[in-house]
Image (tube, rainbow, N blue to C red):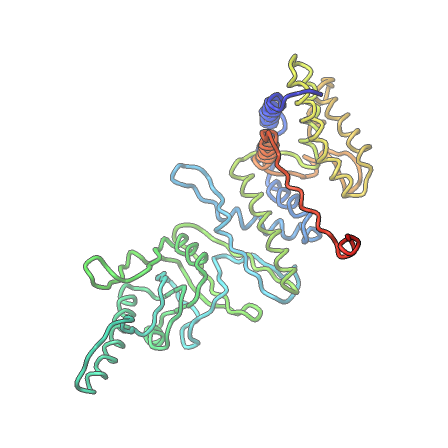
Length: 441
């Protein structure tokens, strides 16, 4: 058909707009109307196709409890469920069912010295992004001395500068010190004597998250504007308790009762790195899915329900148009059926048979105005039993905002390709082989 790409683009944009409108009006449901199990069902839907899908019930409850416990209300009055407040750590050994949810934020680091206490209550945390090492004169600084005893005084002064820095940190009230770099033996000695906990080489991302959770500030240096060095108590973060615990072969540091917001840690156990990495990716996807659903407060039914319903609706909508955009919208509607077809094929079922049945149910709901269309609009593919079923009752749910963004991004990507007028293709030069060269006289 001789249709200009501009016409196709207009048709696709109109189809996308109508799809989003129809999802919001007809195919979405409030989270608050579906009971307490809706959050677990959203997590189970996300985990069902993942590596830990066979244990989705156990991990779905863990994800639901973790994301609900970090609920906050921001300055604008909106409810947020920050995924970054849920830390996921991986430890070798034991079964995946030995994974557990722990209250507080945890990092895979231990005390810098075994002489330090294993726990501190009413912790005041100093966040440092510089090393605590013995002071050395800067490169290029030259000191001329005539008396050998003066050299010893210079060395002693270097030690005194290091001691003064440590004392300024401790005098601010800090009893837990976290740094992204190293700590020498001399500063460690002073920390041990004061009964403080020092942790070195902390990951920067973990340091930022803990600082945000405890309302602390990361200090890049101790220098002040007047040329002196000081450490202000306002930079400290606060939490109820900091303690170290042995988990498997690792020392793990826990931070409980953070000042500004709650935090949790999901401790994953598994046989090897491959298993743990797959578990972490699956848990992160589930956390994001549940967080999106709770923040937007709307969900849609999965199992191809939305795609088939939109396909039936757009086919009917295209017939009301008297322009060439009708053809583009009809193709848009046809392309949406790819999703349920692939779902059925992946489950080793007859995709044509199942999709035709599903289209019949949604046609009854939208076009024929039957007596009970309310149940039909929630029908999707039940690929466990190989039939069409009410997926709202089965708990196959996902966040509405994720479905809308998927349709928008796919449409924008297609439009971007359609805007390309010319395609330049370079054909590689043919190289003569050895046998061909021998035949040339």
